[in-house]
Image 1 (cartoon, helix red, strand yellow):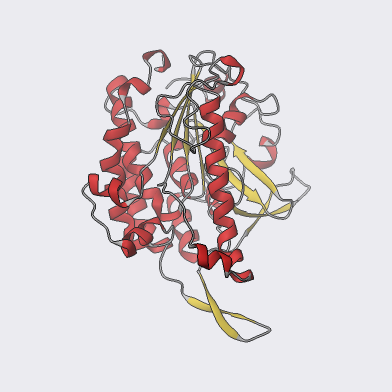
Image 2 (cartoon, rainbow, N blue to C red; image 1 turned 60 degrees about the vertical axis):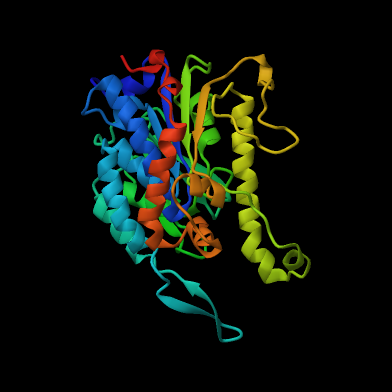
Length: 381
């Protein structure tokens, strides 16, 4: 596409957003959906078109941030797939050591080495490739959590952004590393986020430790709120938001275990409880803001929000794609699994599942992604 990035982001007319969830190695399912979307884009724009040519803003959290960054650099999905299937098993490998609790001297949990993550991030994204680099072809948003201030940071490359001058020179590998620093897996990372000549260190962890592990609602806010620089017009014919998950399933804990639980049990399970709520809330709100053709039942009380539309007018065109990691759904995709395999596929840190998760995503995608979800009036001019 011609013109500068700023000209593209400021240009009038409909805009397109791609949102990618966090989920560790389950990001391999995302790639299957992206292949299907890219096929539609190339049918509209030509065989060499990439998702960066179509989407004006690509954003992600954690594993989604890695994929989003590569796509925003103009990489085709096949490139992302090959790199991701290579790095996944290396990054999400078995823990390299046992960690001791000092005051009792016992080995209680495993600690992951951050070196593979940093090595792969630097291999994919050189030190010279920064948030403000001209090699970034479209709008990019990397969601991270600044742990020392409890604040969620949607790091954007819009030159009009309030903090762009502070952050434009941050290497992308550091932002990806920050967004992927899942607590108990990888150490936090320190990044200088202060203005030139006034250093200010922030300590960052995984963006999934926020309400934006599914960053779709956050990206809608980034695109439309006055405090952010995009100022894109809301409306069903003005804004297309495509959200891709990393696998969902019905959560259920054993009743007896819950009743007999101790502090360690809650320490292990509370983060998952909160992340599940956040993801459900994001989907609920986006279905409330749109007449989505992919609306799903949120729960038995609110249903799929058919007939519920905030303000009586759709604020965007919204579609959500996600693989269902349940035995029956997987069987329909040709993936028969036992209980142990199902639990393993749902885990974010089993790198050996990379190929199988990609296969699940690639089989689920044609059943969900439809050409009519990408209305012709959204095609870039």
